[in-house]
Image 1 (spheres, rainbow, N blue to C red):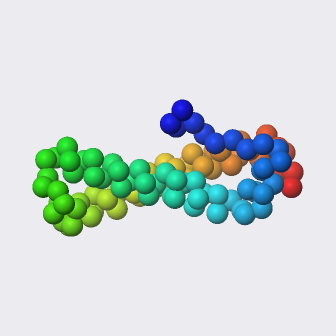
Image 2 (image 1 turned 60 degrees about the vertical axis):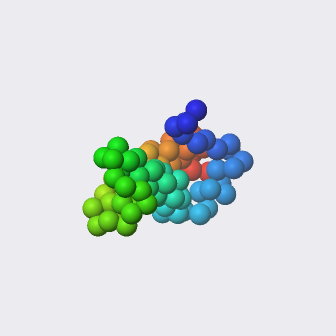
Amino acid sequence: MLCAMQSWSAAEWPAVRARGKNDFLFRYGFLRRGLPLGALVAVAIEGALGSEFPAALWSTTFLLRLVFCIAVLTLSGCIRANFNWNLQERRFGGRV
């Protein structure tokens, strides 16, 4: 499934948890969701608007749209990653 939430086994979670919650949010909220999906959505919007490629990718409006899309999708990704972190913590009882 494309949007399935990643899950870890009891043996894997301590290694993930050892990196810390901030690293987890950065890794799964920004690097795996916000950045790639933000860029993809911004390019898709630009294409839907019928802009000339590749010149449109350097316009100020596109760059502002790109920053906005990355910010929104990073925020939603961090909310989801935080939910996943809390779920894993409850699941494994915070064991290290």
